[in-house]
Length: 115
Length: 111
Image 1 (cartoon, rainbow over the protein chains, first blue to last red):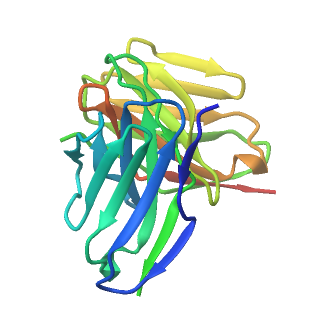
Image 2 (cartoon, rainbow over the protein chains, first blue to last red):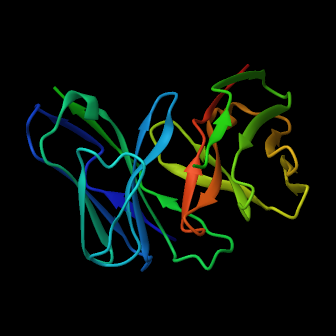
C-alpha cells in the first residue's frame, strides 16, 4: 500500500519566517509533486521533481523553493512566509510514466496559516 | 496551456444520481481521471478513462467521454451520504508525468 506522509497536518507561522514542509513516500516513486489547494482554484502545481536533485517549476513557483536530496523525500521551502501563502499544501508521488496510465498518490495535506 | 473546468457545487438527494461535468483543452491527453477528496484528506484516484473509449462503468460509477467536445462526465448512481466530497477532473500534462486538475466540484448529498 503506497503511503505518502507529510510532516505536519496543521502549521501556524508568522510573516517573514522560513517554513519547511516535508513529504516522504515509501514506494520508490521517481516523481514527487507539491501543490497548493485553494477554494475555487483547485490544485495548482508549485514544483515537481522526477529524480533526486532534479526539480521543475510548476505553475506558481514564486515565493517557494524545493529540495530533493533523497528519492523518498521532497521538501517545500517558503524562504520568507507571507500571508498570501496561507493555504492547504498537498504532496504527491507517482512512478515515472511512459505516457500510459499513471496515478498520483497524495498525502493528507498540511494546512498552513501565516499570521 | 492546458485548462480544466468544472462547476464548483452540486447538491443531490440521497438515492438520486449525481452527474459531475468537466471540460478540458488538451486534445492530446491519453488518459483522463477523476479524483475524490473527502473532508480533511488528500486526493484518491476514483476512476480513469482511456481517450479512445466513450464510456467506462465501474459499479455505481459511469464515466462518459466526448472527445470531439472535450467533455468528460462522472455519473454516480444511487448517491449516498458517504459520496459527499470534492471531485476533481484531471488531464495529463508534461508528457504524461503530471496532471492538470480542475477546480473541483463539491458534491453535497442531502438526506
